Image (cartoon, rainbow, N blue to C red; front, top):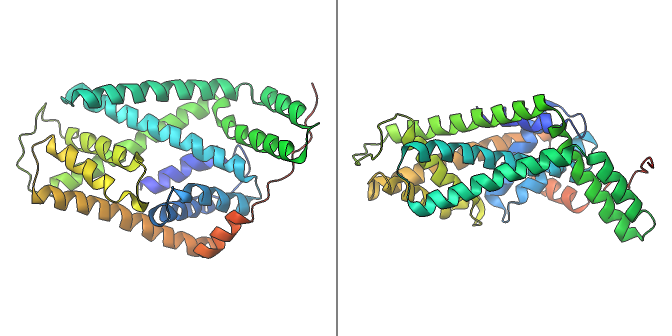
Length: 294
């Protein structure tokens, strides 16, 4: 269900760059997750931008800029969930300090993006004037910079900003509920510190596992995800074999679902992984369009 919501959110951002169908965005997104689980350095983020750009005849860097904005919104969701957890649960001091710093950085980033979105045309005009008289390489760099700013157009409307934030909060509510259902399926007997709010254990574990996913690691976050899940369960005095089984099950469930939808996405886009890799290597950005001089 979260994959469908994420598609609505990402498509709203992509449509500021060019028109593309819902199912193209849906399949491209899922193929990206499949590639993240099988390739290093989160290569799926680039490949899903390539897939959408090719299908919609758009600049790849413009679509990639929407992926960057999407990830910043995900960090906003993490900060939102962290705020809920820290308000009711006695998190360790080091985690409280790190979470507060992350939340502050996310708020500042969002504010900067909103301000930049108000001056996109001015920035494009400046870049165009600075790079047009230069050589081919400088012109190409200028084209990339201009295309990267196009993804910020989604922040030019208050309605768009509210929509994106509400969709992000909805996604994280789903993540918390899913984690809570998983925890309810296991015979835990921990001390459960803090108020006995039904959603709180799921929120705490969601924060910890998301941090585990964010750490640079092997494809699929193997190892880091499990360590973060075990650390989150230990906060509830849940340790030993049942904690290991729970962490392994949650990760396996996530990977299995994402990979299943990713394979379906390959068929939906009529692509093979080799085709997608070839497309990413054969990328040629559209030439820098002449800008209207002020």
